[in-house]
Amino acid sequence: MMELLEHKLDNGIRLVHKQVPNIVAHCGLIINSGSRDELENEHGVAHFIEHMLFKGTTKRKPFHILSRLEDRGGELNAYTTKEETTIYASFLKEDYSIAFDLINDIAFDSTFPAKEIKKEKEVINEEINSYKDSPSELIFDDFEELIFPGEPIGRNILGTPRSVNSITKAAITTFIARNFNTYEMVVSSVGNISGKRIISLFEKYFSQVPANRGDQNRLKQKKYKPDYRIIKKETWQNHCITGNIAYDLRDKRRIAMHLLNNILGGQGLNSRLNLSLREKNGFAYNIESNYHPYYDTGIFQIYFGTESENVEKSINITRKELKKLREVQLGNIQLHRAKKQIKGIIARASENHESYMLSMGKSLLVYNKVDPVQVVNNKIDSITAGELLEIANDVFCEKEMSTLIYK
Image (cartoon, rainbow, N blue to C red):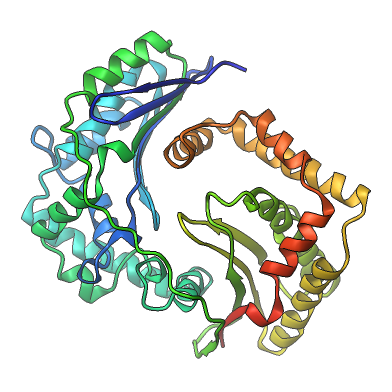
């Protein structure tokens, strides 16, 4: 495997690059700032900024931003999470200079025109409405509000129609000044370009960005209290999420938690929940469990959609599967298979160069390093059945689980 290249500018922005012999390249700017960094009166502004980055800069109109890479067969995109804002691009390898120039331009020289702000409020309100028509997606946002009530990390990323309509240019620039810390930014790249050339382009397009340490103050989470809630919805299916808080990004147990989650309801059709709820009983079409670690906390959740008469049956089956993991230690063969499966999933993900570019950038942002796949595999191999049993009893504790049902 080719070595990763890292480079840091005087303004704090870092570069991580992996050279691969491909025609298509990928790069992105990952910023350690998301919706949880919003103040009470800023709900939705982080996501709004992501939209507005495409609406004009000091040297480009919106059409020119959208066309710059697309005219050459490339793609420019962005997304906002609770803790990151990311601008990224996929393009032909000869267009690295264009991609770096464009990402730098929209990230640091956007002008946020008043007419575009007004127009984008309508677009985002439609996005909010589309979520209301998708209960299987909306329930995840509502569940995080249940788990983290009244806290920025619990609020949905999009905002509300009222909060979005109140956003001003001043609110946008204030949020950026406070949260877009150049020492918390990483440019990540995977493509067929030499280390010398990528450093040259990185310095050309990002060294002139003024250093900004910001004034971000990420609040610690309040004490978690389990909750149970039913919300009446006019839907064909009932939707249910049950879950608990879990380990944060720096907790040494997080890799074992990922392994345990994959056994329970991960990607494979052979997960315990899929076999018991779907294959054996036919109660659910969509069934999954997820573990998402954050800066100072984490969330574990199980989701399924089913007919109203099968909700309680499905919850009981789910509880039985959780109980098995709390009480019955995995045998050597089971543990070996589980480790082999998740290592295969990680290997396949690393072959998706866009996905790898994004995960590589986040890893450098959070841990100041990028572990090679073999190092991750070694950590997985070191996990014991006893550790998984302890984690199951910690995270899957029945009295600590919260539940939200759309009926």
